[in-house]
Length: 109
Length: 179
Image 1 (tube, rainbow over the protein chains, first blue to last red):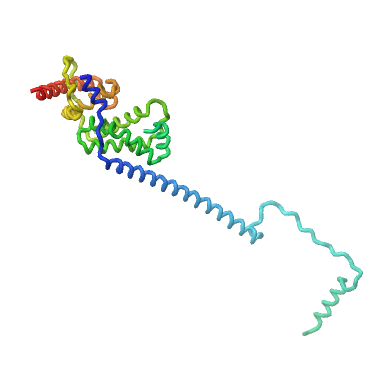
Image 2: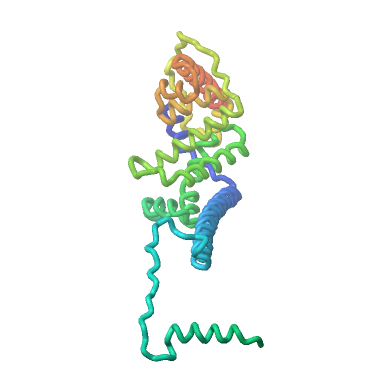
């Protein structure tokens, strides 16, 4: 019986050659499907980041083009008006400009 | 075969060449194991392919602790058992408590491997499985009971009955050859 067991323990039989091809095709398809899955996941991630970047860019552009609409919540300091100084040159005198305006308005073109 | 460790590393990287080398080296042995458990030749082929597929798919889990061949053999044996369970061809309901068989020697030394396999194939699936697991693979009755979902006593009685039948078959074979 011991001899029988030993012989069975070391029993080997040549499998048909086609079995490697079957196994290889299964392993290859597994490899391909895993790569496809990785590619799909990467594509989804890339698409998500691209959309995010696009959104940020659009928002940034809109904010810069129409600042009145998109004002920030922070309080802006009041605008300081420039006060014009009196000038001696008559050409730049305010009173002269006012007079000129009056005279022109009287004229009917 | 080149350095086994190197081949295992290459298999972990899914290199086809290394996978082929490993397959070429172990396919005969593993097909032999499958044939011991599974009677049908085509089924044994399918089981071996499935076992190799699992080996290559899970090779990253092998941490290098213990024997690599032992690790692979366990996968092959488990695959055979899974196949038998799926086919539901176990017949392990017989529990015999007081079975005893004499240890008289049958001398099958001159028997060829194919004769041995034919003799083994003549055993019912349940007998053959328990005989293989206990006598060839070296599992304990407790482990066999867990693996097959049977009681320890059933495992013991199946083994005794398997041995009894084997002796009978071998004796018949020897007598036929001498006569």
